[in-house]
Amino acid sequence: MVLDSLSQYSNWGFFILRLSVAIIFLYHAYPKLTKPAMMAKGMGWSASSIMLLGFVEAVGALSVLFGVYTQAGALLLGLVMIGAIYFKMSKWKVPFSAMDKMGWEFDLILLAASIAILFGAIGTYVLI
Image 1 (cartoon, rainbow, N blue to C red):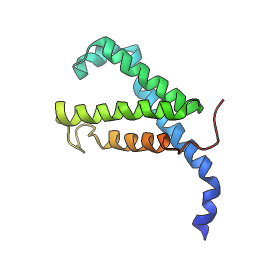
Image 2 (tube, one colour):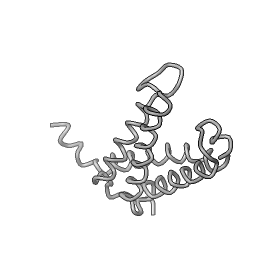
Image 3 (cartoon, rainbow, N blue to C red):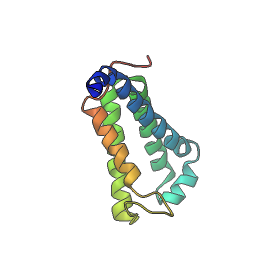
């Protein structure tokens, strides 16, 4: 079958998953690290908490990206997403999906991707 022959490219698929997750987390970590006071106002947290969150996101993303301690990085990112889902659902009352704001469906898919990487979807390709 055609689909059976695609399994030979699974390492590329895992690499693309890791690359995508890392890019998203680095993109979201950047404003937390460069403008923590502004981010803190929007989230209702302290600037130091936002900096810590940005640092965890960046370290986890770089770990996943470069393939160094990949599962530890994926665990950090998964924990961040569990926290994000918790705050969106319980504290901020954000729906699963909304037209006027990002719901927590995006957080859920990032959690699932982090769990997939954590449980072995690493592949053999690394950037280092």
